[in-house]
Length: 360
Image (cartoon, rainbow, N blue to C red; front, side, top):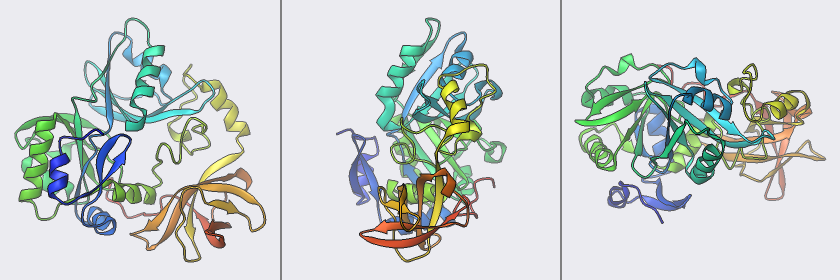
């Protein structure tokens, strides 16, 4: 079982640890609800060092990445990040990723469960003039998220954080350590992600938690409830190699006007012929939806839940699900089979939580 550099810190904080894609990761410290609300109202710090990082460089790196990803890499400038995905020829999603454009190279951030698969796919498709390195074992990642994240982190940074726009990044010094500092996150709140070596991450983590009363450690449990409230998809739940970006509601990052990219033809076909769609729903009846629960129109099964939880912010059950396209209309009532009982839910427009500070 792999451990991040913060493993002993998690033990000292009495974290509940779980196996997450081969890593021992904290699911919670004091409790998912408390940590969730702290991120919504103040600030939380997450260990997400299990994520993978690749460096892509060489003449033609932009064109290569534009071919193996669905967004348009030519539209981003140095020190800008982009949300994207890689797809197979049949349009199925290999992974959703972040692309960071440095002046001389790119960094790709991928889901931990897909590191080897992604790296092999990139190697299999790259031309000889492109260099690719898997640096996942040398880079660690912590996320500081919440409406007070800028105020808190500014005390320890050598730059003015107000100058970093959403989905932009820079090289900075935090607590005296060199880092890549990115204004990104997976919570729907104002936040920053810090990429650095294990020693730097450990010292920054300890300095922030020992000096700041308004920041608390937050586990992957509340990271999941936070992302669900925003309809941020999770690989392995809401997207996978059997789902294409159109079905998943990722048409906004799928640039079919590009001359070519892997999977383009099948994705274009799907724009006209897809039969299912990812929806957001809130429970009307009291109950908590979970992954795998079936959805019906009251008589016939029309889909299944991919992610579900009790929303700490809204205090009701919420979820994501794929349903037959003709049923995917906001305001429509459907039924979730919760342990043998058909409970009413209603399709709603995303996000569930609409008061996030992400654009502050």
